[in-house]
Length: 341
Image 1 (tube, rainbow, N blue to C red):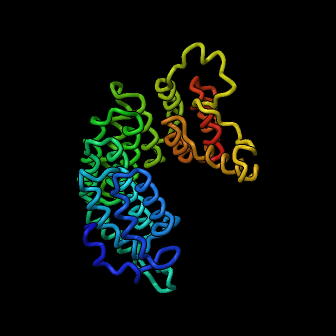
Image 2 (spheres, rainbow, N blue to C red; image 1 turned 180 degrees about the vertical axis):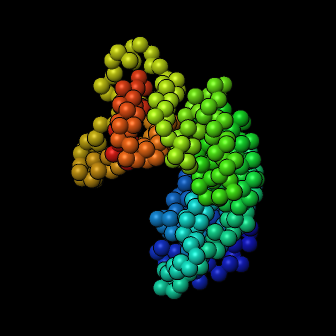
Image 3 (cartoon, rainbow, N blue to C red; image 1 turned 30 degrees about the vertical axis):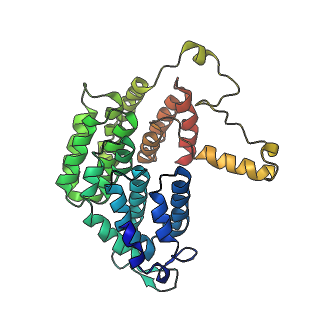
């Protein structure tokens, strides 16, 4: 596919900043053995050909090439390629609405979102393979695609159920359960088997606490009527079982030079870079801190607060538990959680 890039009239297409003539070189550079060259290529593509999530004709034309790179074991950073494909596909599927009209950079009507969504659904089976990949980073990037692009509910449910026992890290396990929730909300045919699976996991005494908590939250997300007086107390009990117990010397006192997860998180000083005004450096440092997630359960608990919505007493009890958690990262993220929802 990379060797055939010149057969496409890229200059006739556009991206956020003009003609897309640079796109083929970015695609070539994504497969470069040089890390810096690859990183610059991905950055340029995201900035122009996938600007703020937009999908242009050149973005759609890039997808077959990206899939070819994702399929090739020799590609140096397949996880980043798969992540880019999923990002493009998610935006396309989200905006592929009946009757929706999108205007391209040339001011004309564009079918890029519909074209990309159709292409992604046509390649949905590829994500079953990526989700089983030997590379954990590729698996993590691909799992969300099982809910986004597979229209065969039985196939998607089976692929996710098969993945859970194979995953040995909390982040991956929570992602699998979350993706099953996404699938149940997208495909009506997946709802009953997904809910039954959540019941088995949430109520299983022999199931790991992190998986039980994730299943409980996703069950509440997909079936709000399942929330009762025992839901939050059960979640709190599971959260306590998940929480790592810090060593005594760390729980008694914290090094003032360290943030909740280790590195210093104090504001950047004005003289950190003579060429950057202090208020600008501090603003960017604050944005970086705001987007940082320290505990693997943070995203799950944000979802739980969103699901609980106006149940103020339940949300307060959950937040209180997060704020007095022995894990400093969980406490720190609890503050962001409350502001986020």
